[in-house]
Amino acid sequence: MKDTRPDTATISEIIEMALSDHISFDLIRAQHGLGPDQVKALMRANLKPGSYRAWRKRVRVFSDRREVYK
Image 1 (tube, rainbow, N blue to C red):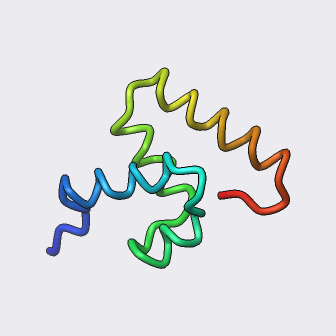
Image 2 (image 1 turned 45 degrees about the horizontal axis):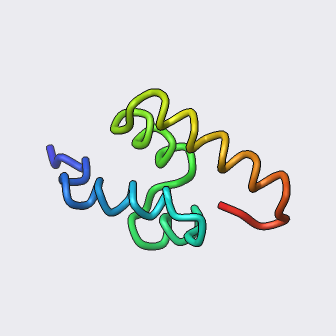
């Protein structure tokens, strides 16, 4: 069976993209094939709990203020 988990470099790239305020979940899906729920799970697994909560809060606040964000 083929292992479909991304390697460490790819995980780092996805995290960097997700942390950026200028890159949407749609762009991450286009480049890496991961949807928003998968990106959130990857972030939860690879960030410290406080960092993950701060990121989710920032994404949520920005999405409330902007029509199109993440």
